[in-house]
Image 1 (tube, rainbow, N blue to C red):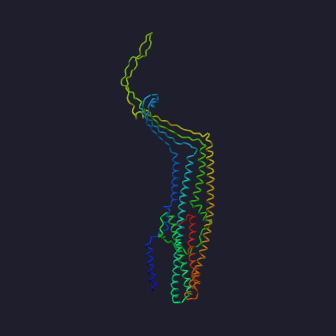
Image 2 (spheres, one colour):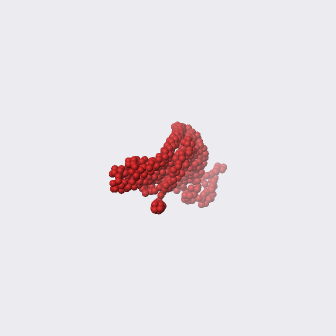
Image 3 (cartoon, one colour):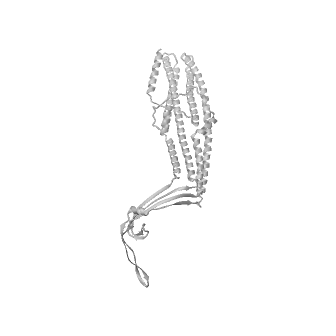
Length: 472
């Protein structure tokens, strides 16, 4: 009853300590990494660039309108922009122009470019998703590696405690003269070995924690604790075969979708280059006006009929001709009045026919074809590498599973041997060398089992990754 009470006390104490500790979950690790990772952010920026290129290619179908206005001073002999006559005086001048054009036919260049940039945009989206998936897998693997190292550390500390108790017991027996000194020193040597194992395990935990912090791109905190996740001890062999995993990867993996989309985009680029062979037709229009300070506005003040210099001859007599006479006055011709008075417009069609362009179009088409062949090779090679990686990952998974199942049996056998050896050693039936050999076998088997368990889980996560089935 006393042992039960003490056990309950320590259990409650451990529960309270765990409640006070702040532990980070796998989901929080993944979300933090996705938010802080620079490569993921660069992939997102590339996606945004591709989206802008796609929008611009669509906007190229809209009219292109521009305008300009000038105002300045001219001195000396020049042409009056209002009358187009020579003058020799200082004048202020201004002109305003607005021009616009809209493509009517361009050899389907714009339409092909829209499709090409749209495919490039979709590929950039897949690259961004693939970057996030790659980072997610790395975080999950690093998380599991740290949990594995923490379990190994826990086992190492448990082994150390067992050895400490044996050393304490043997020190009492040695002080009473019940055992030889070498028996005690053998156990003390084992105690030092177990302490080294604990130090190594602690260093491995710190290294794994550092690696995880770097993936999340956060400052390293050696006191950072991870939330434990359940690992089924009765794990079965992974269900899907390697060929099934490969077929799923071809359908779902962003990497494959990205290279296929880039191949299609490169194919559209050939059509864009070929459009240079065709004529282009566009509609244009313009609006213009001008102003000159030398321009004057004349207005009629009075009109009358008077004798002019002209005459007619009637019967040999020259008779003067009366004509209408006007009296005018000069007034300044205002700025906006001149702009309105001089307003002119133009519009029409412009046809551009390529005749000779130094073989530029032909070479551009040839380069586009080469780029397409290269994109096709990249897509084919990506598929080959993917299949090889999946086959290798599948074999690694099977090897890890077989090792795990064998180690389960080994640990069970060594546990039974150690129970017997512990009783026999305490009763003096076997010596310290035999006892330590059995203990070391059990300690090593337990650590190997823990490592094999997490290794198998890691291998299955890699296969899940290829099928876009990562769960976190």
